Length: 321
Image (cartoon, rainbow, N blue to C red; front, side, top):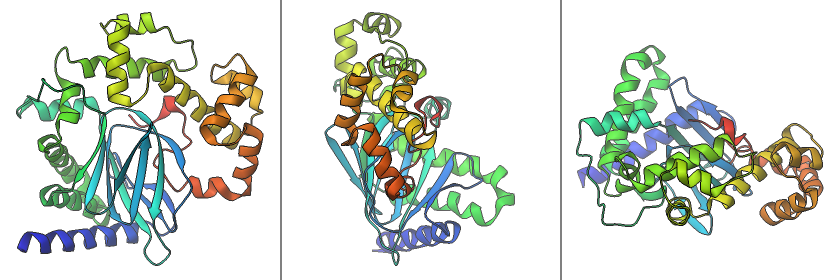
């Protein structure tokens, strides 16, 4: 009973701090390293984005994030973790002007997790197949308490340099110890298949504009092409070629909307040689061909979309590390 009361009070306080900090809809850096906050006042249209390795925690409202054909819903009782960069589609599904969607994102890098692994049990269930690099789990009071202490620092900025690293480390420790922590641990074991996939993902992200040679990618990952394909799909819900195509199309859409490029120029910039192929694949992913999609954006669709996801419409090569 006491734990339940603490949990409810902590959720209310977390929502209150984010609400004070976020006066308008959108996403905003907090001054606390790697921590961003979000506010959305109404359910929005699906937003295509590249999520970095991060914790996403909702204080009020609800959101769904889609990877391939899988959908992950999270709200104030749960959190979402991504272990590697993933091209996803997200949508705020519960929000109103009176009770806006309020959430935070804490990104982390490989070194952050390795520092935790040095002083904790690094083992995981190696008998299982490679886990998906995204999962949702119920928020434990100890995790929420650590997050709340970190978020409170927005009201005392002078304390950030000394206390933020401690609270951030505790949050990552709680994630590592989580019952579904296998989803993170698998990426930091020597010779793990997931680690090889993570390296392949990094290569594709860096060179997403260039032709993808699976044999070369597999050799760098120290896997056979068939093994790379299998484990890559288990981690990301898509093949290496599908992953690259998604990055290309998301970047092309950013160029069309933010930089006002012509469709043919955007296609060329992201690596397409055939404008007709680009138009077909663009329409398949976003629901409309490029010209009509840009027109919809200028009619106000994107103004909603831009407030709906961390890092939306950003170049995959510049997504948060």
